[in-house]
Length: 271
Image (cartoon, rainbow, N blue to C red):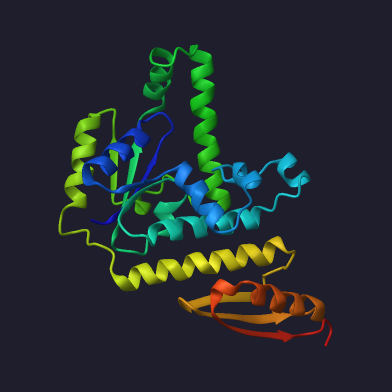
């Protein structure tokens, strides 16, 4: 079985579809809860887990010292970490973009016209029409803005997906059946050892980037490469000798990295 990513319009029952697909194919479901657990494994403090939301950080987040770059690095690291465990269904969180280069990942988007989603919240959730309309509009904007902020791309770009299903025309059971059928076809292969190793390396790279940024290091001129598990290379240029030593200390403190090669040139400004 391949990895499957499922993203959705808010209120289109995409999460239910993901649950059913995972259940039918006997795959692990990677949702918000598993993402939070994986974030803890990557070193995120439990009190900071609420920051792991698909939304652009606001004014008060910045006042509290929230660092968007740290969040994005952790988010990407968590997705790669979940994917590297092989065979699962990942719900949202940019997984359709982060895993787009892996042919073993099947990317699905569930769409439903806004008016039908508004009607769902009115009839099934008991919301007033104005409240339901504002909710759907706000959530659509939130997800769209986050994706643009995090990845500089349109979440509705059809090239991000292998399969787009409209539940206004196709029933939920048929949607689930189509996804399962494609997942079981020969067109989507199971992730091989090499692909899984790359995912693990990318997860570790994101963890290092997050650690550096969290400690106030400006990583613009620094490149982090984990060429294989246990081999890490940090190279680039920096203009502050104190920060250079700080980077070395941070890398030394991350004992899980194994063999680390730090090659950072010191270039003074104006010289």
